[in-house]
Length: 279
Image (cartoon, rainbow, N blue to C red; front, side, top):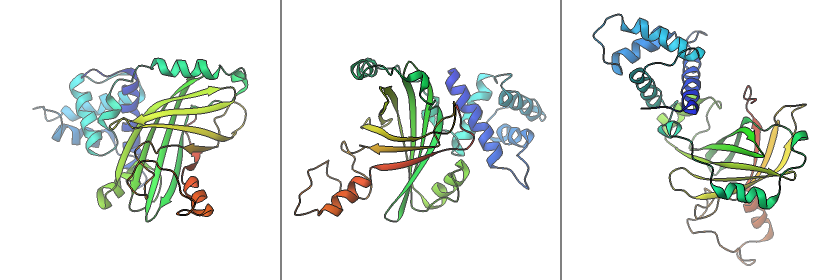
């Protein structure tokens, strides 16, 4: 399988995260230990010492100095997928920017203050409680290109709140208690001081339109510390915890003012920048 530069960066990041998350006694798992597991179950080799060369290849790949052969890279991907640190969706080529994105940007107008606007490229984490379940969202905003940003969101619905936002903690909840993961991708447009996100579910293609209502700046030339996002995700998939019908008008008789406001608040998410995710 051929991998794009973006996919290679994703694989490298997942490998480094796995190595860090599976540390023992305060020490990261060695490349030899990972290579030994790969050589035993994922790489066909009759050489008893093959794992040594594989360990060095992994070390160089993690350092960004060398890319493993196709067979080895395929094995690394499957190894990380089996351990929930990578998804097949991560390996797909990036979607070509649709003409609609440029058309929307032209309609709203370019941001004249873009040069003085804060950078947005970072990973932001938001969570909320829906009944007994916890929803956890990771929103990744890519680098800006003429007022447009590629965005990706991973949304987890979990019966038990994870002990942390680390990938291994979430994978532990998914394996022991169940839950679900949804992925969304699309674009963010910055125009005249406003920030609109247009995304859709990677599987169902259900669309969403979100608005960043507030940015809490993080200092000069730093991504925001916090984002307050108003989410519309109700185009056929209602907010978790509500009935399964499509979006409907609210009746004054059925829903008093406080109930209406409470439901609206379900669409408001507070995201905080993940530590170490600048740029």
